[in-house]
Image (cartoon, rainbow, N blue to C red; front, side, top):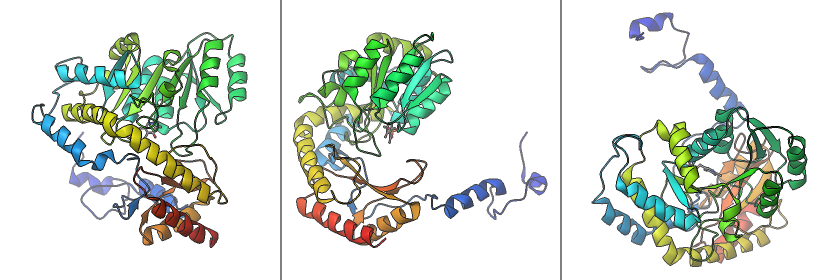
Length: 397
Ligand SMILES: Cc1ncc(COP(=O)(O)O)c(C=O)c1O
């Protein structure tokens, strides 16, 4: 029943003075976040970008923007419905063929975001009778996809192949599908999954391997294509599905699931986040298509420059609490307490660096950190200046 203004008198007491009701209990939750230095706000962009996932600068690239704008003229402004109804426009098939080629899959299925792609894939293939084995540091969208599926979830220690093997052995007599889920490049820790060993385990225990390539897409591949770490290791045929996002190194947005043609057919029939949602914006499909096509011209050289810069930054921070020395754009600097991470980030912002503090629940309690994202065009001078200031501010805390 409609709750009109006259009902507000009888509603639970609120501190809100505006026109919309907001319950006090929710307000208290916000207060609790403030007390533990976990409250977020939407802060504007300031300073040199060490925070975004635009690793290759494609979101700011005028040549790419021109290519996208040119094609935009011919696309409809909306898809008008679910793809299973009138939303299936020819553009989607065309773009999905290109995305499949780029990521080394037989077929691809496009989604509005990586979050939705992960929900769609995991809730689509898993059910309550199945078993899913998940790396401890997997992204929230993978966790939510598994939760939605109601499959039995076994969380194994981060990158611990021995622990995973024991769990698989223990469950070997159980019936149901077994699926191993991991990120390839971990978004908050910057380290990589032991993909070869995971593929071997999947083979040995007849499990399926699902790899989220969100942070690796566009940075690794086979030279001509930037499909990610699975592709660069030659493992595509041994991996059931990979997930790729457009909003990070590809500089646009959206995402796709890459796998067999049968998997695409299956998701179209069983995946509720795919079925019960309006098809992605045609403009998004065009933008993503142009970015994978443009990537071939600039991606490999920019990725090489990024890897070099990130190595230099790691080297210069080596005495300063670094967790991982693996190559890649993400350099996490662990500071522990939320308050300390916030304070050091703020000081870096004051001297012109856009560095953000990453706190729970994005990372485990007690592991608040600065997540430095190196981009292809950060000069050595800038990287060293950041390193110096960070060590100066960090040591004072
Ligand atoms: C590993 C991983 N998977 C999925 C996503 C979700 O992708 P999107 O931002 O396109 O929703 C993210 C986003 O940060 C991510 O880090």
